[in-house]
Length: 265
Image 1 (cartoon, helix red, strand yellow):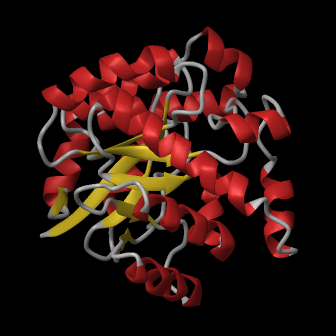
Image 2 (tube, rainbow, N blue to C red):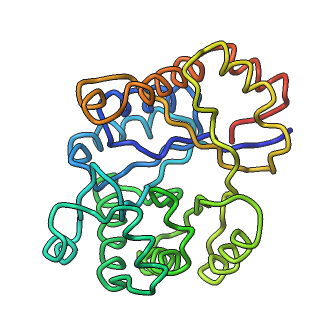
């Protein structure tokens, strides 16, 4: 039997997304849920997530998705906010600064620490895993800052790290770096196919998990449309979200897993 971690990393983005993720987690349809504490919804959405933690299997992982870039997030630390205002870096700008070794290391470290603390204090638990939005953990300079922030957080047990890359030299380099901080990576596998047709997705999933290594992390973006999501995302992406939600919530999806001898860790 192969174990995979099927998870969504964008809790806190929109009410429709959050409700869908809580439902799937409580029904055992996803095995990992990552919260973005840098969104304006987090102060309202952490309480129902606490209930979901209590109502879900002990095997389900609940963690944090650190956000240093992208839209719909704002700095949590006071210094980051004072320096850059209400906006995070764009992914391209953060990538460029990482390549040129011009990252504001101290500010990013404080921001990572502030987001980790915000999760732990409000949720009254430490994260089971840590991911970084938009794959920015792929940058060694950012990975070092994140790992340092985790090591300084004083957690009782080290959280898993969601790898942003698949197999190869980058993965090996990240694994060696994580090991120095006593951290373990969950290897990245192909995310759920971004299609909007339910029947097509069911068919694609029949062979989707073939060849994946044990404990691989498979990303999903299930959700339900709401006013915020309709305003912030294109219709095509919302259609993919709703398709994934419907398929993951179906009994047919679990029958597919059983046929392929796949177990949601």
